Amino acid sequence: MNEDGNYKTFVALFENDVVGFVTIVQALSVGVAIGYLHIQALAVKKEFQHRGVGTKLLRHTENYAKELGISSIILCSGFKRTDAHAFYEHNGYDKDSYCFDKIINLD
Image (cartoon, rainbow, N blue to C red; front, side, top):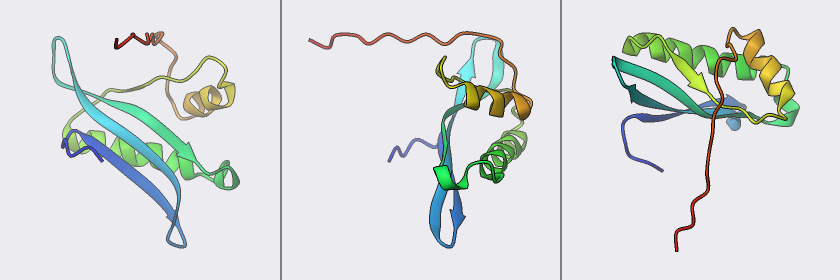
């Protein structure tokens, strides 16, 4: 568990079992004093998908951003995750950039 205060994980519970979670980090951006929230992960157990759990996790994240005075939330999603893309678009998120990554050799 990261003890950095900029990282948060919110969980969705059903009968004391975790059925979903969202992990976010508050980050800074060049030229923006307050920064943005970056959703690093959002997952819901298969049997709880399409029951509003993911949407509630997003809304909780958005309300948390408002409490911090942050108006921008970003996330990345794999090209082939079309169901996830539809979910985010349905919840008001726009496709407006590409995410890039590179695995570097640590030797």
